[in-house]
Amino acid sequence: MISTVLVANRGEIACRVFRTCRESGIRTVAVHSDADENALHARVADAAVRLPGAASADTYLRGDLIVKAAVAAGADAVHPGYGFLSENADFARAVTDAGLTWIGPPPEAMEAMASKTRAKELMGIAPLTDVTETDLPVLVKAAAGGGGRGMRVVGRLADLDAALTAARAEAASAFGDGEVFVEPYVEGGRHVEVQVLADTHGTVWTLGTRDCSLQRRHQKVIEEAPAPGLSAPLTEDLYGQAVRAARAVGYVGAGTVEFLVADGRAHFLEMNTRLQVEHPVTEAVFGVDLVALQIRIAEGHALDTDPPPARGHAVEARLYAEDPANGWAPQTGRLHRLAVPDGIRLDTGYTDGDNIGVHYDPMMAKAVAHAPTRAEAVRRLAGALERAAVHGPVTNRDLLVRTLRHEEFTSARMDTGFYDRHLADLTSPAPDPLAPLAAALADAHGRSRFGGGWRNVPSQPQVKRYAMAGEEHEVRYRHTRTGLTADGVRVVHADARLVVLETDGVRRRYDVARYGDDRIHVNTTTLTALPRFPDPTAQHAPGSLLAPMPGTVVRVAEGLTQGTTVQAGQPLLWLEAMKMEHRITAPATGTLTELKAVPGQQVTVGSLLAVVQEA
Image (cartoon, rainbow, N blue to C red; front, side, top):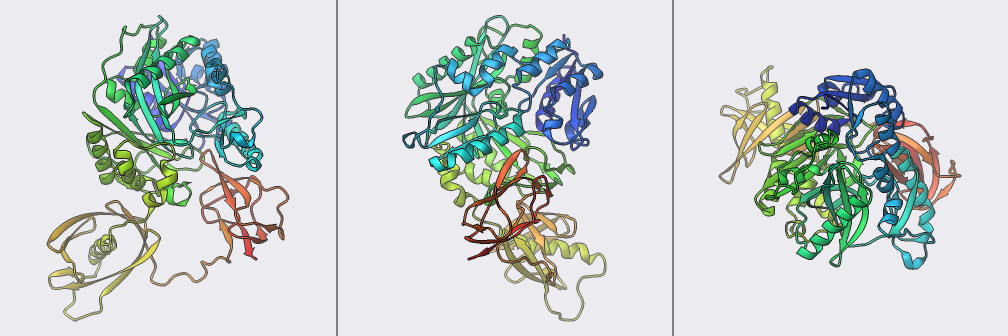
């Protein structure tokens, strides 16, 4: 019997595994980088071991240090989580060589399937080698890992070499393995996967299908189980291929076989030899705990002959600290509050007051809803996210709500190109026009306790300015004998945290939370209080390129120096933030008059990187 488990991962992943361990009476051990010293996963574990450094390559990708940590902490088993070393056969061997139990598949199975190139060969599929015009578009993919890292769509032969270089660099940074390959890019397909679970006694379960078609930058955003609209023959084909892949490598434990479904056919993509981020939707539909089953299998227990029956439908949305309207730029800062209504499962590695940093993936949480039907599950999740308190950095919450209510999604007609087609509409600003007034009235109530309020003399209205959805809004209100008033709006109630306004006989409630001097959250709208007199020095020269997120300058375009002529859209430099590379391009054709960025430089949001003077 396993008594103590070290989780070789961080954040939400580690917290998820720890939850099952606690419920099973198993002690837990966390590992953490210096950047994660105060992270939630390090705080909730029974013991925690430091991995010196902040970069993944120095910490969570150092299998030798993690094995030493497990031995030092007295663990007798290691769970890899998902990501980092979860599909690294050498790490699995190092764990078992140290006399520890590996909660995962055999290293040989991982070697056969963890490399996408070898997996395709096993399934009789050859990758592209000499790419020609007739092969376009193609997809460059990392052979190891997942999560969209090291992946690029290429539509022109002239762009292939640059895509290969960028994909290799990103894959090496994320997985410690820079191998990439090229395959045909199937447009308009759906990303469908099958959850498999196998024991050491020859039993292989298929636990339904999942649809993961809604993706940004090849990373999943919304997942659901079962995948809607699949015919019975297609579903059986998916199950058959998944079982064949698992049995071909003697698979043990939880794994996922991924496909691209187009024109009624299933195209094998890869097998992920680990638990998936989206596993909660399968757990909800089948009423199982996949982590608990992983542990039982590692202890040698046999699965039942048949899996439990499926019930209902489940949908999961990934809440990211990112700005979808600004190239999905990751965001950082303090998470002041994160809460969803009852009845929604929330898997997260953060709690109120935690800081979201620059070093790792920007996913904050996963919200999961389960209901008897797909329509009910989708409605429940959309409503819960709309009512959720998400106070802190900019997130994709509004995008998730709009996506879940989009006709193409509700009718299950989505594919992997969904966000390419609809991103502009899904991110167009639609803030509540009364939110600035509610913020001003709440602020006025708070200040009235310190000498403000009504005077028996007519006075000019109070004026406050706020930035909301990229625009400036000015609001006016007055203090009178009967309280605060605003033109055209009846103020039913106002205090520092709650404002109730009535327009045209309809009352609406506004919950107000203020953090610091300028950040205000009014229901789901975020505002910034503006000073009465703007700072005249906050100016940048035309053509200035500012860092859209905090991160590290990983490289500058070859031969780029001050005075170089550049073309509009030409890549100038690359930033790495939260394990993703972000390309900074020339805003116009002209001359590079300043180049401040150098490789290895740490930059903050708004840092001046370069200036391009338009021709």
